[in-house]
Image 1 (tube, rainbow, N blue to C red):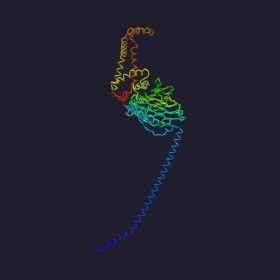
Image 2: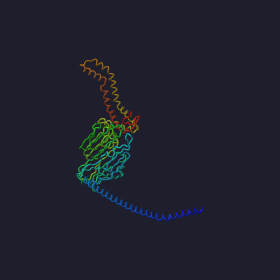
Image 3: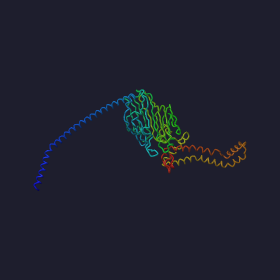
Image 4: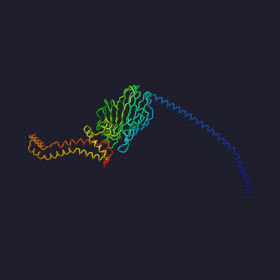
Length: 496
């Protein structure tokens, strides 16, 4: 390395050292300035956050005050409309379930009412869960005046309490109490009891302290839309109608085959029960004692759709304003099985099963159904049961059939002699002589001209009774035999 190179490197080194010494104060000043600005920014950020928090707190306070004011005004309005019943006007709608092997009942705390009813052992024709009614399509409420205020319990909230108990007869059941507190001394309670393996639901109304509200009369309103559940809509609609029974008396019904879109009736006499009956299932409201009267309505939907009927009823319950009271009722949610309904005693619930009127009902009740039930004990396939039932009926009617055939044979043998009598008396003026001679011939031969018709006429009601029984027999519902998929309805050969 020569001398010039060494001198150059030294000069460069001196320049670098000098530059470093010269710029050091400037960098320190920049760092200090940046630190100062960062401190100011942090202070401003803290101030902004504090201001925002203060504003949010103020807004929350204002909103709380507004909500409290609105709630206060709303409560004042409710108290003006409902009086003490305003205590039950606010709440949360919750669901409570009672369930056994047969039914699943869902209750809502809004109105304390059954919300859905599912029959667990059955399905719709398209294999979906079968509901007798569901959700908001139902009205289930007490309606009355209390201190000149119109009260509807369907718009009020109840508090639920559920427990499992055992009755004096050893039967276990679930009990759901829906209680609506009106004041410290007044309340309305719905008490539901569901026993194991039963379609019947016990339903009590308990009134406490309502005498102070000058309530003179109570109506219980029960409305719902009956959903379509079967394959043939028109056939299902034909067998869907409303039944009711007078206390200790006859069963009446709306005409199931009527074309009227709307039917209604007001009964002022005592009623034992009201049934909303479909082709295979029914919902029945039953009074332990009686209802003082009832208004009943059914609306038809002739065009196929989700529902086949709208049922509406308002019953006058026997309310006593002088003190506390318990009104007992029952609700049946289940199949139209003749023998099972008959098993509920003197209620006569089996009358909701459509098996024909007058004489046809007697034939089915005392001949066809007992034989059908007896065969069902020994045979599983309902197609075979139908064949055997038909054979048994035909064998039982054989004496009449034999007499008819015999009479027809005798008449054929006598025909040549009858023709000879006709040739003997050809004139119209000899009609009486001809008739007398013919009757003498029949009498001598022991023949009866009506002998062939009368046995057939006697058979016809029995055969027609069977024809009316099969379409409404729930035992045949969705049961197959050979090519038939459902013995209770038609089988489609071709779907266009």
